[in-house]
Image (tube, rainbow, N blue to C red):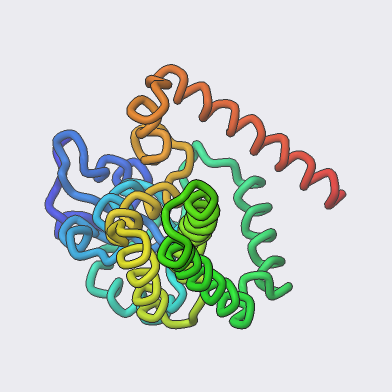
Length: 265
């Protein structure tokens, strides 16, 4: 089906029209839906702060929940979205694709609302300060151990233990910073993340964010979740076993969903 110029489309759009604008096939355009509004992100995806792949993974789909999860200052982001608006879903169209289960979406959104009301997403600054402080102490202690006691077996093993623990903990700390879960403003999260992962660990923050954002945008989706795509390279799982792993995770998710509904009843 050949894509029509955007100007030829009516203000009210159907899912059939939206699905073909997924960036693949004859149509290279990328449309997505947020709160029933339809946006053309074909050009914007290249300037998207979270990376072009994250936003393109939702081309031709509803991205409402991903939008809520990924953006802290939603009012600011919506200002940028205004220029990308091309229409809205027709009144007779559902708010999401037909292959999505309404009850599952409703339960997920109710759970997220409950978590927010309970304050579970609010960071504890004292906790994160102590985490960062003990990382610096462990890292410094590992080098001081070698410098003061030399490279004999016992000091080397103790220093290696300090260094290994510090490096592993740094990985999890920069993970929280990458999710912008420590400070209110993203720029402070990104700045400290660069210090932790770039300087203390020697890895690029941009590389980690590029892969991890995709993982949370499309978790456990083969060809879209880098964690699954790396299986053949890192663990020799191959495509078949990667797909089987995904199926098992989906089964567990459905079981958790059933238990959650049983508790509500």
